Image (cartoon, rainbow, N blue to C red; front, side):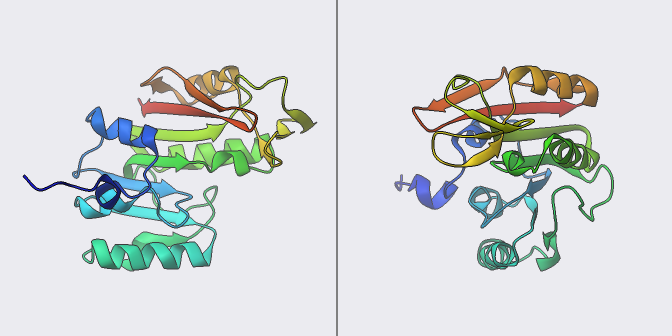
Amino acid sequence: MPIVNPQELFGDIDIYLLDQLLKGRLNPQMLLLDAGCGGGRNLTYFLKSGYEVYGVDQSNASIAHVRALAARLAPQLPADNFRVEAVEKMSFADATFDAVISSAVLHFASDESHWQTMVTEMWRVLRPGGIFFARLASTVGIEDQVKQIEDRRYHLPDGSDRLLVDEQMLSKTSAALGGELLDPFKTVVVHGMRSMSNWCLRKS
């Protein structure tokens, strides 16, 4: 049996998104949106595996990079699947996607209202029964190491300014959306730098 290089197969996929794959929650029959896709670090496996992949990002350069990646790995996909758009104002119809990925995006919201608008928009384009996966910065485990700027915006030990959530906020938002929590909240604290939490819901 030939040895498969995981890097070639999966690219730089988020380890917790890979966890969703290993749990069998994502399959090639699903339409998948990466909302805030950047340069496509989470898309290599999906493009190689026959998924109908879409992506949005505000950066022209990022979308150009993702289109080039898709042209190489999945030439059957239209370039228009990848669009220069803000996550909070996407051009897709309601209930289009079976899965929406938001990896390291929501903490760039300017304030809590902006954050809520981004979440609501991603939820809008998700089909009933679909999966929403988010990885985002939080205060969990570093409450005494972050400095509040205003509202939910904080200065982090790594020198960045981010909108940070906590478990109470995510629980409240999950209930408001009517989403079913698929996994317990998981948080990884990068010592002395930041805290990253996972939020995975099924749309009822």
